[in-house]
Image (cartoon, rainbow, N blue to C red; front, side, top):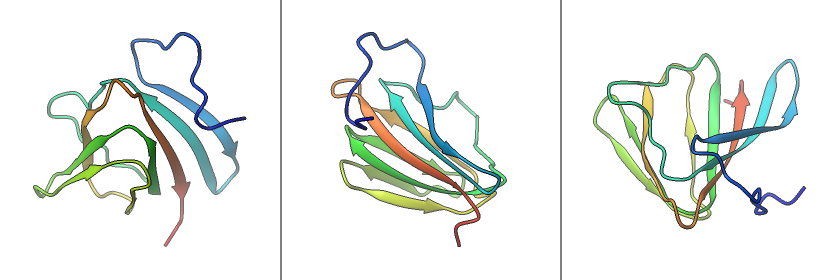
Length: 105
């Protein structure tokens, strides 16, 4: 698999592909094309998440008011239950994320 190769036809919704999954870990590739979290929605995940932007750009926001603008090569660790959301993702180029979920600290 090539992490940068996009499907010929991208759906209107964000595309998530599981690359590796086990009892304690999930690694996925996420392709965003302008999607953002719904207004008022906050992720509150039960596992830590390390996420990197491989291509494109994105903005992540936290409930406490922090924001992070991300571009190719940028990565961030989001501890379990740290409420956050995706504010914006680029369409062209598509935003390709690599996300690792598990007990990472």
